[in-house]
Structures are given as structure tokens and as C-alpha cells.
Image (tube, rainbow, N blue to C red; front, side, top):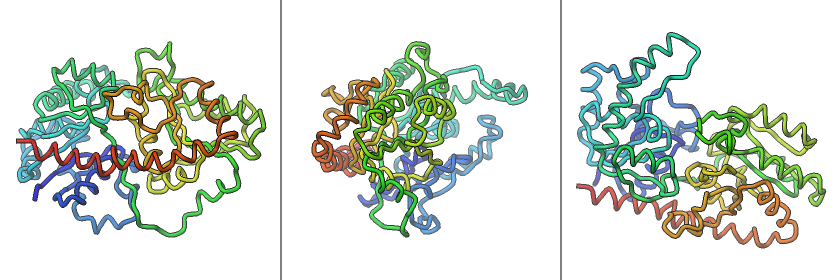
Amino acid sequence: MMRIALVDNMNNNFFAMARYLRMFNADVSLYVMPGSPNHFSPQEDTFKNLEELTWIKEFPIDYRKDWFFINRRSLDLIRGEFREYDRIVVCGVALGLLNQSGIKCDLFIPYGGDLINDPFFRIPKTRSIKKFLRKLAQEPFKNRYQKKGIRECGSIISNNNWSVADKALNMLGRESVNMPRLMVFIEKEESKVDRRWEFMDSHDFVVFSPTRHLWKTNAEPLPDFKKEGGAKRNDRLIRAFASIVSEGIYKTPLLILFEYGSDVEESKKLIKELGMFNNVVWMKMQPRKFLIRGMAKATFIADQFRMGMCATSAGTTNEALAVGVPVITNTDGAIYNDSDPYFEAPILQALTEEEIYSYLKDYYSNPEKYLDLKDKSVQWFNRNLGNGLAIKYMEILELIR
């Protein structure tokens, strides 16, 4: 039986992957990094008792204080922990930590900044002089070992529609395997009755958007911000929904948004200006295990609408496909590109306010067209992102020598 270590758990991606791979009888352990955000904890994505999942472990050291100024004892702990694994799959700065410990990783599945930012020196952004000086001193160490880890790892997974990642890979002299990176695992077990989404039942039309609010500020940051705006362009969805509300074709239209992202207050300000305060519900961030239950009750799920940003690289669109609800978003051409893993995926392509509006309005006259997407979405997900993707990962890991 192959022993596999999955290291780090951004977006709970590796927790999902671990459960799929264990279904294929692989001996998989998941390592959670110290200081990970609560919403990336496995507990956020399962109703099971984590104490019973003994294959979930803590990374052997807490690297945060000293970052890459790590002593020999810490490096020995890392080497000792991962020495016996047949395959090591990693994301995040764990790749650099393992490389510094002399461990070559077999598969790197980047989530974004670990490929686009971490290998390259950047002036730290912080108002604290103490933090600035510490980060300034540590940055070259992080860059060095992250870069070295990327150059020396066995294979890298990346979508070919992810242009900023392609640029980083070219700079590092690496090629990648063109496959989806994100996985979603839907548990069949039911928990206690969850009443948090019951309010949706009293509305005849619901658009659900759990995407971060990034449209007014350049929080990512992106070089073409002045031309294209922030990373998600949630403002386009808000304006399109306001147009639907003003037409009055639905009795009780509702837009569900989440207090997540640097531009939440700007979105609230825009909603007030558009006069549709009563048609919007703001929710706190939710664990995925609860979030997907709300998504499953919606008419549409809306993700991101920014030129140059492909939604298939983020969680919301993949979660929508998993639960079988029509998702409106910008794929940056991915669904029309026959070399892309998301070619012909049942996603409703939209970039502009007018394109979003057209889907929202068309549902009133043609609801059956969108209801038909439910089964198509789930089937496509299972074939390409669920069991089907897990099988491809197992094949890659088995081929590694």
C-alpha cells in the first residue's frame, strides 16, 4: 500500500483529496500547518469527530516566529517525520521547508501565492517597523528555498488558463501538468437539522455569492488594477441584481452575500446607493460543510467577474458544480478552449454586468433550461473533479519513480 503525505491544507483542498485517495485504499496522512486560518481547518469541512481521523496530523515544527531561520534540530524533526513516505504532495511554503530539510517533494499543487509570490523577493508591506525589518531579513530565505523546491520537485499541477502561474513557471524554468487543482468532497452523512438556510424558502429567486469582496481595492495586488479593477469585481453582480430588482419580475428576489474580503463596506455602500438594501442578506463566513447546503438551495450561484481572472482556479465555482446549481462566472475562455481541463464544463460564462443580468432575467421565462443544468453539473463534477480527478492523481503518483 502506497504511503502518501499531503502537506498543508489551503482551502481544505488536501483534506478533500485525502478522503478520495483513501477510498482507493491509499495510506494517506494530511499535515495541517501551524497558524492556518480556522476556515481551512478539516473540522470546517466534515461532521466527523477529528479525533477519530488519526491520519490528520500537525506539521512537526512551528516555523512562523523564525520563518526560515530554522535550526538543525527543527530540520531533523522534519526529515524524521517524512522519511518513510513513498510520495509527498505539497502546497504552500511547506515546499520550501521540506526542501531546506533536504526532502524532495513528488508533487506540488500550488494554490496561488506559493507559486506566484513566495519564490520572488518583494518589499514587505506592514506599518510596523519591527515586522518590516524582520520580514525583510527573512524574505530572501523564503524565496530561496521555495524557488529551489519548485525547481527540484517531481511534477507541478497547474491549469493552462492560469496566465500568472504560467509566467511564474516560465521564470522558474518549469513546466506543469495541465489538470484541475481543486477538489471538493461532499459528505453523504447527514448532521443534525440545520436551520440557518430556512429563510431562503420564502424567496422565489435567490442568487448566492460566497466570493470574497475584492473590486474597489487592489488587495491581491494586480498589475492591471487601474484598468480592470479588483480581483473579483463583485460590483458587477450587485449592479446586475439591482436591475432585476427594479424590474419587479420576481416577487421576492434575494441576493446572499458574505462578510468576507477587503471591500465588504464598499459593497454595502453600493447596495445602499442602488436602493436594494431589503433584497440583500449578509452572512458571516461559514464552514464549507454548512456553506454548500445553502448553495444547494439557491437559484444561481455567482462567483467572480474580472477580466484576466479565471474562476475555475477558485473554490466557489467548483463547489457549485459539486452541488449541481447553475453557476454564473468568468472562466476567461476556459470552457471554450479544448485543451483546458474545464472545456465544455456546464458553467454560465459572464464577465459584464449586462451578461450577468441576461441570465438572471432569462430564468424567469426559461426555468427548465437552468434546472436541466443540475444533473449535468453533478455528472461533470464526478467525472472531472471528484472521483475522476482522484483517479488521475493516483495514476500520476503511481508513475513517479
